[in-house]
Amino acid sequence: MLDISLNNYGKLLENLIFIELKRKESEIYFHRNGIECNFMVMKNYEISQLIQVSYDISNEKTLNRELIALIKLSVKFPDVELLLITILYELFDQINRSDQYRMQIIRGELH
Image (cartoon, rainbow, N blue to C red; front, side, top):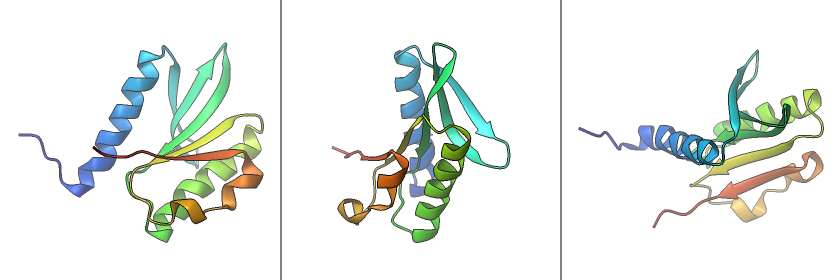
């Protein structure tokens, strides 16, 4: 039986992103060396994107955890595109912290 409780939506979203990245024939890695990053995408033997996936970032603690990971990794990989992909975020249009880090926050919609 498929468990689709709120706790598992994040895992399902991560799997969806992984499948889409694989469909695009990307090399995908997971980073966990003091800082966790869901996906490190490589193209032409170079890291092209760092992607965090979180179903719900409406909790400030969760939002900060996801942003801080990307910001810290942007120091190590300064020319890499940073993406935070989410579904639930009430204040999506008000976020403005990402401007200085070349970060894009993508909010999907469930239909």
